Length: 373
Image 1 (cartoon, rainbow, N blue to C red):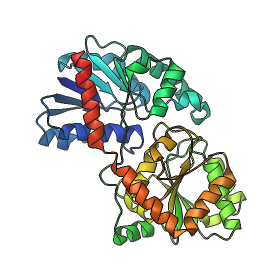
Image 2: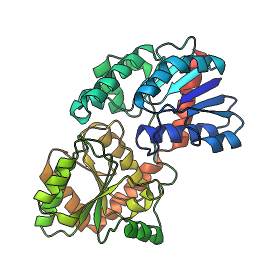
Image 3: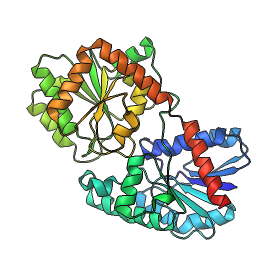
């Protein structure tokens, strides 16, 4: 087969779906097969793959804004698919060309947050995601969901036949592993993190439930638990209220906003944390949970959606709406070394069960099954 992967939506500051697209392409390139891959992506992102893998061709795409990228996808990509004799197109982020001739189409739906938790998105983006995801659901030959929870939501919210959906989990990248003391010290100094800190990783936006997390940190402060909250993530929207809340609660330097943290710094940042707090209200997978576990960091997470599915028994799961319950779980981990050691061991074992090689092999098997049928 000649397989195209549309990675034109990968941003320069990767997170979520961007990480998925990036890691999947690299893992597919490492699998021995007779298939050839054509990758649509911005220049420089996969140039090393094209240089080192004769079966990989990178077609540079510069689409700029979301509107420009959509126009390219719907109008120009179908011509590129014919020019490169593509048999199958994988669109790894919700939308795909409505018209693609005889080319088979696989689309990954990472979640349906815009339908389950609409307040997490601005109105225009919510309408954009809803419209394009519904269109992709109609024309795709197969759909990939990263979790059973997401599969069930796609069936329930979009009316998709479950037989068209394949669950293929994601994974922590190969760089996520316990870091040595020198790397942890370097990152602590870079981000000015002294003493124990609770880590929160994800973009700054509604739905990540940081308001309740900040309130839980205030409860710990009131109980004389000496621990800071370090928040890693790029600004999204409607997050300023959390900063105001931290000031109103008198948390001062107990809450630190680190901004976007590059890949090289994330593993030691996880490794140096006392725990990861991830009380998100809804997730399609919850990649930071696996990343923390792979680094040996204990996790407190919400007991809802895919987060609980991914974490299993390797995290302390709490009702994300219960501030007291969240504070109690964090206090237990901070005060009980035996429990922390148990959670580290469980987390490392849990994370080892996921890999991008597994994701790529299961994805390639789906491609082959679709073409065979």
